[in-house]
Image 1 (cartoon, one colour):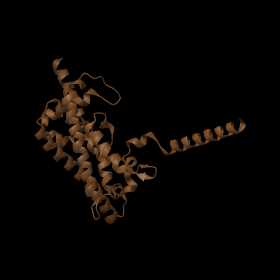
Image 2 (cartoon, rainbow, N blue to C red):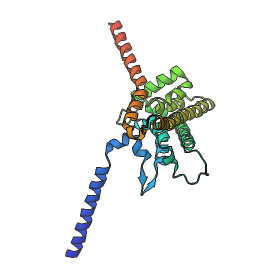
Image 3 (cartoon, one colour):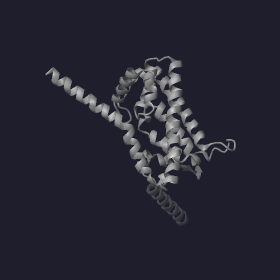
Length: 255
């Protein structure tokens, strides 16, 4: 009996030690850091490319995916293109890692938008009756609808480069039953532009800074993320400020 208790105590101690080690290694803030997903491993096997593709699908196809990193994830995917493509051993020799990564991300974005369009056409109307929650804010839906009505099909292209909006615009396109052929044209075009511009920008800027200035951008990831977040969210902030001013002017005029 004592022997069994000793074994139980040893196992319990090991469990808590391992739990503490995991807790020390993982912090919740890492979920907002694209580098965390890119370098993710499972049992020593790199799975970054698969995680990146799922995130792109979720951010463009699932209305709860708007909080996931998008633009910064693509830019960093260009920097880490070789590492991301390394597990894809089924690919033929001589392929370009950055081209493969950009193409796979574009395909994931296309599929994500198709899912968003389908979801909007079938269930989208119900979102307007849905109460605000932690992951869902109705104001994002109205902002995306206004953006779509203003720009039409081109909104799908513009939305790719705008956080939050790119999550809801394909859903709006489904709600208003945009012509499928027209939607697919803008869907494919926007996915290719978004993916190739950002992935190749990360890839070539990394090489340029390393060669010309001897600066390794991998050592400045946090700064890159901050710059990209500010650059992509600034249009939304300016739009919100403009709308707020118009609301105040309208109220003042009514009085």
